[in-house]
Image (cartoon, rainbow, N blue to C red; front, side, top):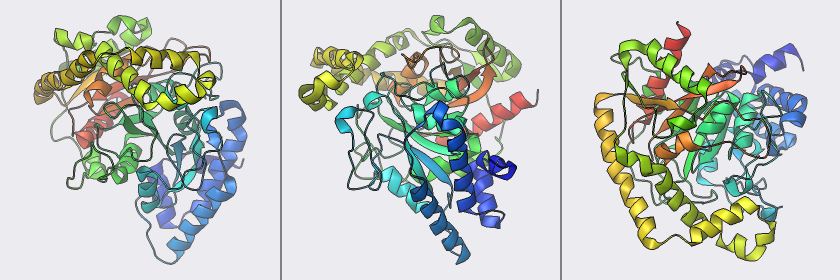
Length: 447
């Protein structure tokens, strides 16, 4: 791989768009550089479920032809994006991480894929997911240490960005499947407000908990990818018509006042490793008067169990046909989740659903005084071993509440591996969250 190709493969998406528009290089050169990077590292990382170089290069050539004729395809003109293999694509397989869907070829794109094409993106390929986006690992390994998990369930989407194989990727989160792997792999991960991005054409676990999420190498890139995906889609019952989000513009602004953060250890603080606790406490100390330690009221202690009640019951419903018609092909772990969900009573399920709004009312009071909550993104560094994707517990509360959250790879653990700081904002404040995230990264870098 030449030095020029190496440098192109590690550009941010913002830099890539600017370079293509300025004629400094072509989309084809950028995509070819990313493919060369795939050739160099993916035998070890194994981030891709489907990667068709000819398909990716042809899209890039079409983007270059449009540029030559003066046509701007959109904010992602000619930039490659990886897609988690639970997101339907009409011209690539979507196998959902299970042998039960081996060779499955959808007849139409998921809404987010159609929006990516409208924005000018090159669909790079399909990235590895865990089994049906649950807990049983796929083949992907952590780019920082192949003996460690990349996290899940958006394993390949995270690892592909971390390893320089694509500047952007799309994943999903029902518990911690964006925030946790981003922390483990040392990239930026963003889970927007519940209902901000369409899930039409995406494997469904739980309507109440499922989110689309995105991965990148900087906060500006998260905004660049997120904004075109936030278009209203009537096919998703949790989306509502609204005006333009302007995520890119808001995220790029300087905060009108120095942001104020609430450092929330959450009720599961005891599950964080010692170096995670020390790193978060050190970050809070660094921020000084701009960060207050805050305890959550006692009802928040039940959020993890309420989340599990909803998730397991919805998995039992959503994956009923898999269990009935191919249960012997499912992992023991997934079968156990389905069996647990089948035992959930309607009373317990509805109580778990209703308490979300109660907790969000409590969060609204916090966000009246603070720009964002600061919390761990994961229990620690990526664990050794490939049998597990690690604990999602530091994402569970925020997923349950549907609040936007972002992982910032600004911390290191005892083994020198990445650890993420997580910021959470009030529902609907996605742009402000990314603006605060960019401020926090700069504040740490300036020290």
